Image 1 (cartoon, rainbow, N blue to C red):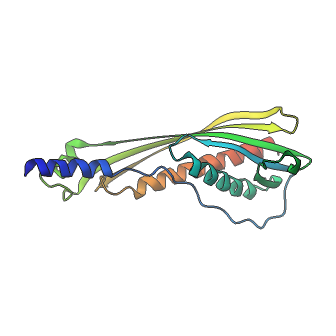
Image 2 (cartoon, one colour):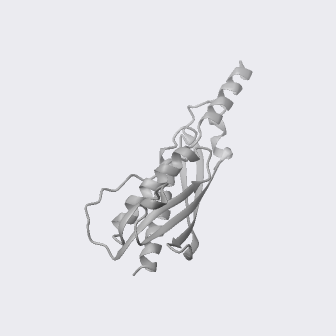
Image 3 (spheres, helix red, strand yellow):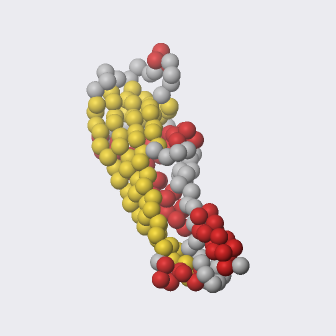
Length: 194
């Protein structure tokens, strides 16, 4: 019986993973005012996670809506595959996104939740740390780098009660961190094109 209970507890702990696919929602825009009479194309966006195919497009779309809300460029869109479809005056933004997530448990307090009171012991202290690094390159029409740099955002969240199972607060913290790093990217563009 103890062996079955131990196996059950270990399976439960392993299955309580945090989802890192938290991308901010799209903002609706109806503004027609802008500072620059240029088009900003979102080029390559590389998210270094196993679900990169799904996340690359989501990051691009979310980033477009955030940059449009800053009202810097005449148009913000995805880079077309056909070079003939590029506008006359444009800039390309390429990015690499590297998220880092780690969590730890306070086992001194949480151990009764594993044995003997599996899943009933409410004090399950879990601390999740998330950092996202956004490396960007802003390239002009004549293929010169206008600006490049790395933007970082880091947050930490602690769940005291039922930390094995409650991941909503940590996933919300990840989404807010991703939103903040995109906002920093928009602010950097605003500084470069005052």
